[in-house]
Amino acid sequence: MAGETKLRGWLQRVDPAIRCAWGIYLALRVAISLLAALILRLLNPPTTPDPILRPYQGVEPILGGWAELVLGVWQRFDTLWYLKIAAQGYSPALGDIHFPPLYPVLIRAMGTFLPGNYLLVALLISNVAYLLGLIYFFRLVAQEFDIEVAKRSTLYLAIFPTAFFFLAGYAESLFLLFAVASFHQMRRGSWLWAGFWGFLATLTRLQGVVLIFPLLYEYLKRKGLRRLGRDGLALALIPMSLAIYLGLRLLVGGTSFLPTAEPTLYAHLAPPWQNVFYSLQTLVSGRFHQADLFNFLSLCLFVTIIILSWRTLPLSYNIYMATGLVLLTLRVVETQPLNSLSRYVLGLFPAFIFLGIAGRSPIVNRLIVYPSIALLIYLFGQFAIWGWVA
Image (cartoon, rainbow, N blue to C red; front, side, top):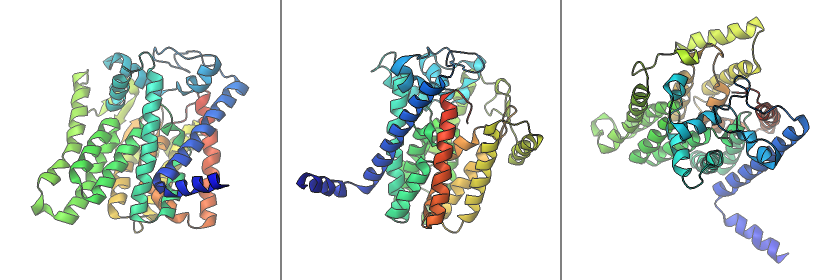
């Protein structure tokens, strides 16, 4: 009894952000891992390499036994591209330069400590970044609102239907950490660090470049144009990172500094409404993949949140969401309208703050939690058996 009292007292003294983030992370980490093992055991899906259905990109697959249940189940889609880039570098003929460099560079660098275990390294990076991202996200929300809103916002972010990508060998968790850290420093008025984290975010995912808009808005609101000194110039780190990435694209085989078209990926830049119209046309035709439906529903959800949250959240948060969503709809992929939007919106973290506020209502809370968990289980199940999700 005394030991239990001491444990409870110790837990109460732990930073609420760490306590909440660790609790959510561990619960999801264990639940997703058990679900993965159960799916592979019961369904026994084919996992051997196939150039179309299961493209391993030359990475040696982990097949059979506990190794496949624990690690092999994460050898899916973009993870394999990151592993291939980390091991061999970019291949201009394959068009893999559309993956920004920071995540594979980190895999390569840390892989020197675990030779031949790039997948494990990729998962460690993602999971550590995810946990830190949740901690800083909680702190940011608690600073802006209160701890109860922070708890709900963190939970809603963690159980969003595509949130299992945070646990995978994808760049989503790194991007979340850097984007939230940039906002955290912005709210503190630490412009150099805000620009630095925005710099890293852009080298992780191209959508990080839109961080310049909320940061510049906040800076000008607080200091004005006349006081644009060293701190203000630090924000130039964000467009600088974009220039570095575009320069890298050109260096490894690009045809132009600004890639308006990517023939090998059947992609090109176009106005957002063209992408939306393409999505609607695909859905109305009846010949669509389930991912097309989830992408369109994600667009509708986040547009609605941006509209409803305009007077609820600080304007800089809405600027980030609005510009981010526009950027995500600029790239048209002929094989999939609104390509992977249901995954990319994970980086638009202010939306989950708005949901955290709305979740004060028990009814709204249930309307968010129950469908999110059900869809999370379903979509991860699809991912585990090599089904395209996002």
